[in-house]
Length: 57
Length: 169
Image 1 (cartoon, chains in turn yellow, orange):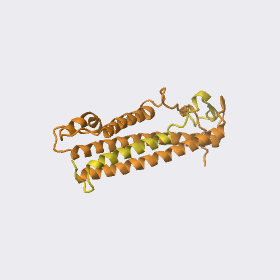
Image 2: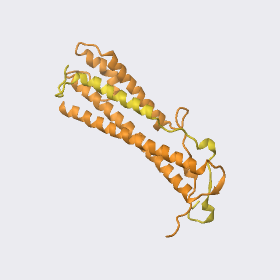
Image 3: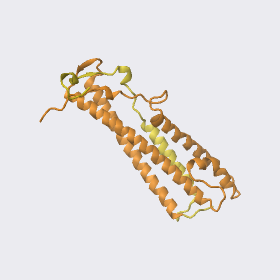
Image 4: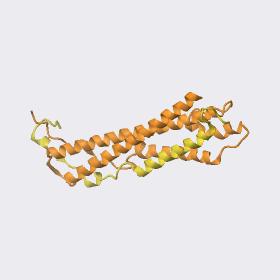
């Protein structure tokens, strides 16, 4: 339907409630965990590299 | 080697930036969703769309699209960081016959790479590599690949809403 076509376009058909109530799509706690896991991993990897960027192997 | 370390630092900053950006987009999404609910009270059926409701729907749809975009960006930044860390480990263990081109290869080949230097892989580090592989994959599947699947979130069907025509100025 063309939204600019007149009075009919002023009405909407609302979605059923079952379709319109999602939980928040992403959780802060999950983001925090992923971030801290990645940073901890990086810290563990940097054990193999000294401060000048030279491998310690 | 310095340039490899530098690439890791850049990827780390980009990932942290994308994560903050995602948090902001998430907060904007939740705010627009709550504003939308409080304005419309979840009406059902056919009725007149007020200018405020129309604007609320537009704001909600925009926040949803922005959030989806930020989730994708954050996922790719996490992957880039993981791949650059894998590259760092590859150079740290040179010279070696075993090659590691990406995080996926790291999970598979790291024990062999370390064994070339006469030592065994650190169990904790190997566990972290495998956990991150799984976590990032789960993140991708839940929010990007199967967002409406049994383990994902449902999405409002915003496209069916029809807005009033713009009033002539």
